[in-house]
Amino acid sequence: MITRRNFIASAPGFALAATGPAGPAVALIITEYRHNAHADVIGTRLLGGYELDGKWVAPRVRVVSMFTDQVPDNDMSRPMAARHHVPILGTVQEALTLGKGSLAVGGVVIIGEHGRYPYNEKGQHLYPRYELFQQVVKVFRDSGRAVPVFTDKHLSTDWRKAKWMFDQSRELRFPLLAGSSVPISWRRPDLDFPLETPMQYVAAAAYGGTESYGFHALESMQVLAERRRGGETGVAAVQSLEGADVWRWTDANPWAVPLMEAAVSRSETRKQGNIRELARNPALFVVEYRDGLKGVVYMLNGAIGDFNAAAQVEGRTRPDATLMWLDAKWHCHFSMLTHYIEELVITGQEPYPPERTLLTTGMLAALMESAWKGGVRLETPHLAVRYRAPAGPKHNRGAAPQGRASA
Figure 1 (cartoon, rainbow, N blue to C red):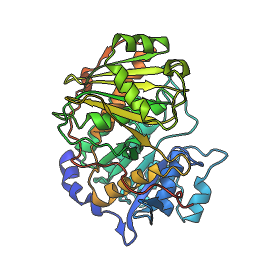
Figure 2: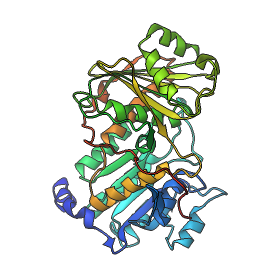
Figure 3: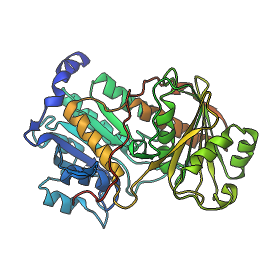
Figure 4: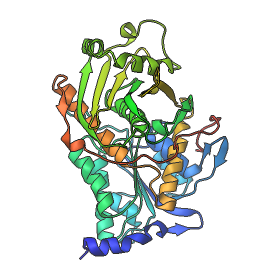
């Protein structure tokens, strides 16, 4: 019988498990693999290499198995698996054990984004990230040891499930990486605040679906907020507003206007004209942090088409702002994320805190509930998530991209 005591006793060796001359063996657990889906822009890089800092980087891990939950008509998994001699197995358990009865890989990459899955009444897309993660953890428990895990985007649509996922990584002592590619992309200008910066307000201005791209926007804001004086202590309350209510709230809270304007000023896609007239059905996320910091995210479809963030620092006359620049042609902003996935598996160290994604997951779930309830303010005592940001910058500071991942 596996107990927590003997499980943890075996944990220190996890980073060396299933390591060969070509790097640690990795299992890809995927919802669907098609052109430009996340399984492509991440998985194809792990299989065939990618460009980073103007140079070609060969894969540092070995993809040795795949599990695909769905196979669309334009599926890439079968031809890619054949090209790279990777078996596609019928269950998550088989993909992790390779038919050997126990864990046989050195890392797990879960890409639970894209595919034909239902939406719930709140408008949340019910990707099976939690269910796939559950199956991975079961193999870990059955095998008596664990390996590093990456899981794409927000952890789950449900806070309790997300917290369970995070707690499993702490209990079983496996390194966890999750979240968005946007906060680690290039920044124009190259803005990075030192730790303990005395911030008063933070903001993001973005576009896209309220949940799918709202998550990216929240992480863009959070990657600035977490560097404030005292570190991250969590979120006390949130509110989600739409349409004319966005501008009514803004007019009643004039402190938000210079933050929004600073963020929008960095946009490279901003259309000429009045933001309030251009934005089609705008959405607003209001975030009240436990230590008094205030944050706002403006989703401005029709006015901008990129991700921007800003922060007001005490003593400065205007906010500092930056564009989180994404490579729309080749999706090379996923190269930095792929690099950190490889670092996670190879070193057994978390490149940056998974608590960031735990907190933004909780924010998003509460904001979707607020919107579903008509824009009410919701107190969030459960989001008392504390962590410290990494000391140095983690975003891409290298050369601009020239090409895409290898096929």
